[in-house]
Length: 478
Image (cartoon, rainbow, N blue to C red; front, side, top):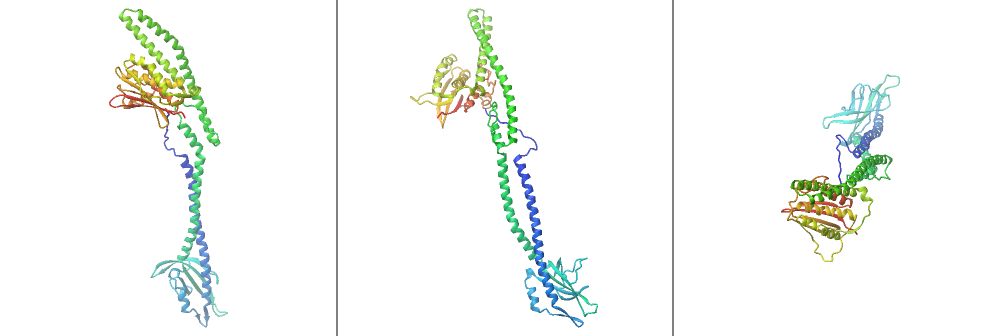
């Protein structure tokens, strides 16, 4: 029977998930950092473009302010002012003043120069500010300020401050558009890299998956070495370590099996002699008490001989022994006929009606590939179990049929049957569901061992209103 073990380690996480996280998180951090620096870079380029335009506008406006006598002549027609302030979403505002705060012309709400900021005469200074507009509230703007001197030669002269401001809305929109144009391809590239990384992790862990399949798909007593030839060195090292452990376990199990087999062989001869001697003694004994004791000794010898024969059969059914035997095409229909006929005297002695359900005249053979001796032993054990436990007056029917590419061999009886919770447990070694009979609890374990060596399965099914059905399923030959 194929068994699997799953050991849950508290806090253990999937290796695939850990690799994916460790590769994905740096990508995500780099993606966020790239987006931030891209936005800063885009905002810087937008500021440069806006600052150049504002500086040019400030110089042009300064050229329209001309000193005359004791005043200033400002040649700035109303039409030019309307053009500058025509777009509400991208307003260009201006103010002309004489420090320290004497307003001359324009929008008196423009933000002043930052504290501590100073510009050289004739060199524009750019800065960010907030315009408090009674209609639109607070408006973020970019401002270019230009200081100029005017006055008659030889006089102290005065300083003129020309400020030109522009809304930051278009600058921010431009920066966002640049960011969007760069982040979308980066996001697509990151998604593609994530898919490639995921595929790479799956491909890299494929040898581990293959190793897992080899280990999970094995029977508990299959100790053959694990074969992973194309795996990376790390996985091959793990496979070699597992194979080394399997070799040690195989050696230990082989020693135990050899001991059981040798002991069974050594015990067969004295037990056969004991049976013969008790039979002879029973013929000559006349005292009832002596006959009863000899009868118990004889039953114990018979049971011991049966146990030894079962142990030898089990040893032959083990994987190492089964592999050494040739598998040939075998007609299960013919095997059932022969074996049923051989066991009829045994059934009559137990008061059981044994028969073969073989109504098809000239039916074709039902072939399987296997070891005849072992399959014969498996069927014999099933029939023997039915005869032993069905009880006197019961009937046992053997049938062989084909179904969907498999050959089914069934032994059905109308005896007391088994409880549902016992149908699987009785396949374990030395487990008996009843104290009746003289079995040793190895018959069904041997059947399962033999059937699994032939890539088949065996189940027990409770019948209504009473009875039990044992079914062996084997792959059909050809």
